Length: 361
Image (tube, rainbow, N blue to C red):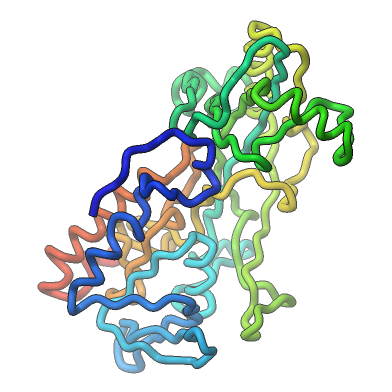
């Protein structure tokens, strides 16, 4: 398996790569694994339950619907749950593995410690400067990390945590990269005129900030809404806190200092203000953490330090759902490192002697 060299094209973020330059499983892993006699994967399937053993503290497999809609039980001696953080939590709640979190009593563990990221941005328009958003990539951006957690005296500014400021010139696609100045119609000949005039003359500044966990912020099963199988959807109870908004206001002032130095023809701001509420209809981040956190105490965590479930030793849960806070930077790299850590101990310790890798204390 071999990656192709990156061509720095504008269709990077939000698109698949026709040059095989992205380190995705279908590029780097699956074709090699398919040659092994002990490997098989099934597409267009949906797992709906992790099935608990009737005789001991283990799981015995999963229930899933196949592409034709048949419900199938897949037995397994070891189950690794590695879906999106929200899906990890929902599947454990549906499977009744681990005690659901109760914010009133402050008991239970599955669904607690959910955290997000808080963002802000400014769009800058230049008449003279010509950028080339098509010859770019997401990784070619620049970051100012001077205001991250623990790098400056945040308490003197009235908040804890921190944020980074970034700019990037990707993607440059024909739809997602289009930006127009204030007052531009949303369609028609004038919109086309403004698109033509401003494509390549626009840049963005943004902030991505840390987010703490709170007792009244959590995930649980929705009492009303269901999926096509009749199972409850996942419900997110969440809103911005005063600390989040204070931090974002501080970071907005830092961005305005940069805008003043860059002297754009004009700029627009999308920055949360004191009193604003979380709006799930507008994209902000998909770097969610928590809900099935790791720890050393089964009373406050779902997993031990090896990502092994406290209540079922042959169930391991990978992903950012294990993190108890969101410390500003996207958790992707740490998720990968923690997955390698867990896989190492599964291979070197668990398979030779199945059982809990940590005592319950």
